[in-house]
Structures are given as C-alpha cells and as structure tokens.
Image (cartoon, rainbow, N blue to C red; front, side, top):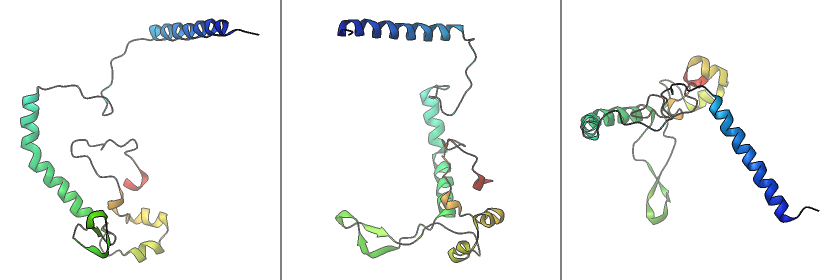
Length: 149
C-alpha cells in the first residue's frame, strides 16, 4: 500500500516531468512572425487622440449605414400586441419583423424546398448575421455560410 506522502512525491515528479517536456518542446520550435488576426487583442497602432477624433468623425456615417441595414432587413414599425405586456407594462411587439424579398410571401416560402430557396436566392436576409460596423467579418467564426453565397 502506498502512503499519502509517497503519492505526493510521485505526483510532484510526474508534474515536473510534464512541465519540463512541455518547456523543452516549446524551446525547439522555430520563432515565426505572428499573423495579424481579427481574433487577437488589438494593438494600439495610433495614439488615443487621433483614434478618438477619427472615430468621432465617422460616427454619423457608421450610424446611418447601420440604420439603413436594419431598415432593409426588418420592419421596425411600432405594432405592439394589445394583450401582451412585459413586466412593468412595457408593450410586446407583435408579428414577424423580418422583411421578405419582393413578391415573396411566407406561404410561398413554406411551399418551397430548402434547395429551391437557396437556388432562387430567396432566403430572408433578416435571418443572417448582422455586419459589425467596424469589422468586415463581424466577429463570426464561420463567415462564409452556404446561404450567404
């Protein structure tokens, strides 16, 4: 039977060997230049004052672009359900808000197969991810979906 002190010594030895082998493996790797990625923490390439003035100047353009995207994709009118309320009485919006392509109804979409919807390009864009105002990929892990082609 192995005592607790012997187990501790064995565990310490095993962990030290794992750490040693890990460090040894890292040391044998060649050093490469890191590739810039949208998933990395941003590095300040300009000073704060110029960044603030530049982004402040772009604010209205970015806001208008995002509002246009929302208006193209969704019905943003105020149509609340008279019978449904959130806590504290806030109204709940009623109905589907995603806009369909011109000449398409929900009934006609439901009669089509997914392949037919994809071939005709009739998938409602309101169900696709919204673009990030400052990042073309939008932070998506899979930016190239079959429906987006």
